[in-house]
Image (tube, rainbow, N blue to C red; front, side, top):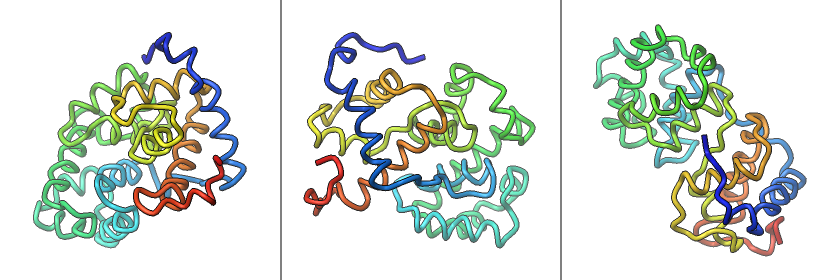
Length: 222
């Protein structure tokens, strides 16, 4: 799916990818991410977390649960204004209402509303389908595939890009697919380890390697 480019195989990143994982795991320990009760909730969380902190997403998820509408059928039948009100804490709630509705419609029309059926398909088959759903870009699609469907695909986000750029390993404008390729070609494919690696990078980016006010003296990567 993601053929390695020769220029990366000889680059120092090939050894750095494994080393950084080991250092972060030793420093932070297991992250046990993604916090959710089931695969569908994880997917909804992946959509809601676009451009907002997880703390606000949790509030929106709690609202959906309290309203008893945490299923593709219930959300699909819900009035748009009511849904927007429930997910308001996550920001951009009108836009995200449309995105969630389109995702639920996709599940209902293609998989009878059962997200677990995505596990029966290969990455090659399911990823393009997800990317064709309104509001689902590469990062959201891969988050759903990795965390909800447990497929071995690495999720690239702003934390990943920032950390590896500051470490001098990549250009800041490297395309999503190329950066993803670096991980998937230099780190043994494993949904469990990709899950842990991404969560560890998030922990580093949120707590130490911040966008502003980075605490370099505490960075486990030296």
